[in-house]
Image 1 (cartoon, rainbow, N blue to C red):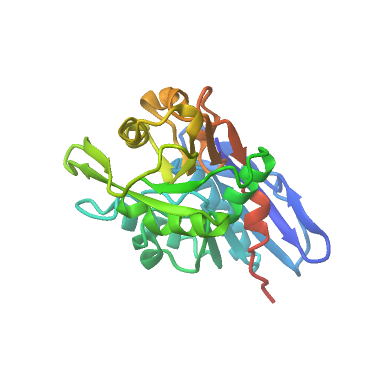
Image 2: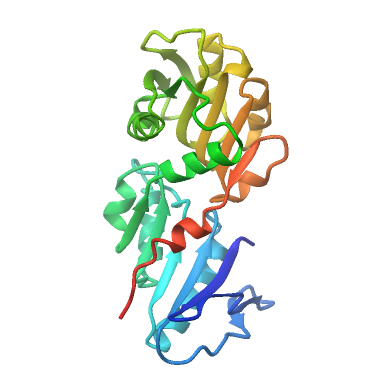
Length: 284
């Protein structure tokens, strides 16, 4: 289970573990031992990591408590579920969004969503940039300003990679990827711009699932692992992702998805909790 129950009380800060999850033998979800925090200045917060429907169900239970007490409810959802399912049938991005909308959250906070489609369906969504987290990862790991350039592994990553390159004050280099959308198979990946072979480069993208994109890119650059770092905002790290260390000296991610814990993948994990709390709205 990767859902956490919090409350922000005006003048007193954040309270943790304000409810306890419980599941009946029949499978129904429930919350027990819910705090009584008074009637004013309280915002209830469910912090969900990943896309587990049970976790979202528990978040809905906390939302029901908040609404019953006529107090705001905020959903921290750094990894927006099904953001990649933004086309075809079923339209997963919309299905998840409609479920989340049924909670009637006064704010949903997501970080670096894969697709802008999610923002069209989820009401009251605050989308946070990954750039401050990238900077934190590089600073905390003593690699700040170490990279000579940033690589966008495909066209979809260009905007976020450009933002990181601009923040680091380095050049951006573009690669392109061909994928079979029916099977998900990567057919090929190539640098579309000349990449100097004497520097060190940070590959920037939003999601690492099985890692095939990043293995293919590393092979295409012909660079040594000591010259490559990888930032992915959401580390799912499934399948053969544990082989990425052969190609990248440093792998940076956040704790937005439970997959970040997989042994042998990330070398630096940046917490997201404080960043999201800093962006909570004030509810009068």
